Image (cartoon, rainbow, N blue to C red; front, top):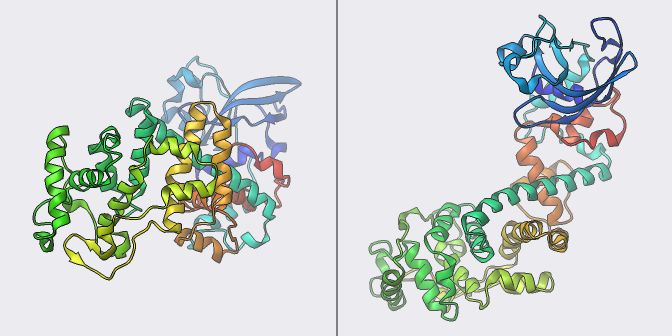
Length: 440
């Protein structure tokens, strides 16, 4: 038995309610189970009960055995003195709070089919445990859950952005630059790109916004990609040597310390995604006057944003993928799919965060509207959902499905998922859709 299963029973009142009685034999009516607490303290806050005509308000604590209350040290913790009901699977002994008052402890039992369904999902070998049930679920119900998941995903990113914003002295341009640069790594080179942004402040790049060659020198040099010996074919390459000379001057001026060039990954990447090409594209993106985030706020629509982030690498990279080695000539643009991924993973979260921090709700709405306007993402996670019969119609939907797959399905948090909760509770009193709309 898992304690989280007892949380589920209590939250949705799926226990044997006619057996929920106090020590005097009075029936306990649960007016409201309370709000689920993910932090320290009792498991549910603001529970409301009615016993023998008297209403009680307080908290709920849940354990497998009643004796766990003592073994967890709650009996000496005043934070648990307002617990009005102790919900357990096994009432093995009386327990008392720090004031010496006996807790009302109940073990009412439940339909064993519920636990059987729960265990069945936990032990399902598929990543999406309920994939065979998806086609039978009301699409509107799924849509509502996806909308909540998108909000959850953006809230999580907002917390991360708040930390970056604070670390940069509430500098919106620096914050945006760090987030944008990080996502230029597209997973494989995320960490070195993040290190690059930390080693090269945006305020330095901004001083050279009218000279893209100097921005490239700053980025390539601080990235450690101008280190001797890294590109042996580039020893006589004029562009490469010019970058080295320029970086020596700029690094001395700004006291820059490069990251290690060996951190960058080239293997198993399509040449168009090599960090050398991506850094040149990043330089083109950062060379706009007035600040990139300011220009983002000014963009009128999705096309305006795509024009801002759909850039091309400098001419040198038309026939190169690495320094010193020529290749077939092809213009290296970010491409529509890469541009949209930047919008989804960097631009929209920052836009949502900035709107939240400044009380500008129109920016938050704009961020959500942009997700609705963008085409659905294509990746392995979304492929899994398509196989289950759930096809996304926009990036809004795919972002919700990514959150669902990564934070719930992969971690088998089926009891906290509205879909999982519904499937487990089917036929056991959990019939109304609004009963699933409590905070997960």
